[in-house]
Amino acid sequence: MELCQHGDIEDFIKNHPKKMLSPCDCQNLLFQMAFALHVAGDRFGLKHYDVKLLNFFLQSAKDPSIAEEEHPHVVLRYGVGSHVFSLRMHPSTAQVAKLADYGTSMTSVDKDWQPVTIGQFTTLENTPPDYLILGNAAQQGYGHDCFGLGLCMLHLFTGHGPYEEILDEVVCPENLKEELRNIWKHESYGVIYSVMYEKDDNGKDIEYQTLFDTLYRFLVLFGIPTNQFEMNKHGK
Image 1 (cartoon, rainbow, N blue to C red):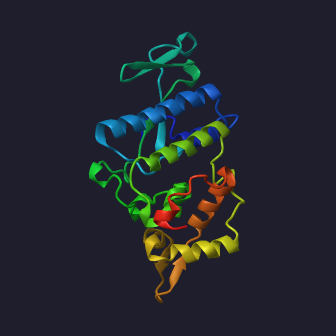
Image 2: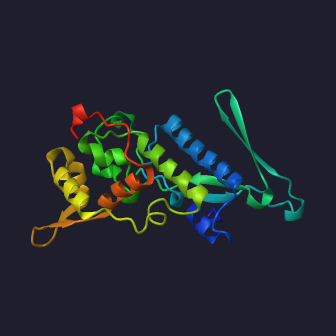
Image 3: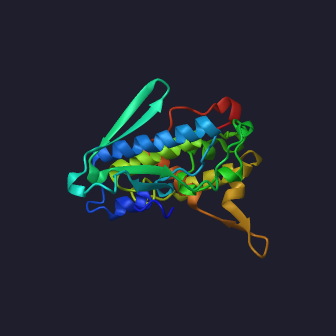
């Protein structure tokens, strides 16, 4: 993304003097990020599957031919149906957010509502909790991107990564880990098993810990979901 001179949003926040953006700047960026996902889905049926601040890049929205001290406020207009939204930005913070990294994306609508595959497990720390709770019964679709956008919002407004910074010291306790291990080894959680385990040279399972901590950190950050994920249909 050599044309986006300000790099990705995560590094942009880290390099900001206060390591945090103003609420107004956060609102403007969040709207642009949501709009990018809306257009990608509406025009191309695209599901990104790895929405995070590292995958949004920033380009200046200023007119380079106008001197900084003489530059007026920048106004970007976005149309959704019959509605027009205007984002007014001070020239010192006028940025255009661009969605990037489509390596895990899918545009095939015939996969919507189909069971998730290992291809939808991208940045494991950002895995939607319903994937970890439902296993093979979890469905492909736009939900993954919506959850990722929510984590981006939290990151934007706090200046800290939701899991790797805010909850860096929070790890899944061993008793819960053992319960999850017993559940995730069932055939109905085969997709999670394929993400978490691989064989070493001796044919023994190597277990990766990330998904244990990811689910536990979600519970610590947001609490136990009130939606019981259709237990009668999918089991506890």
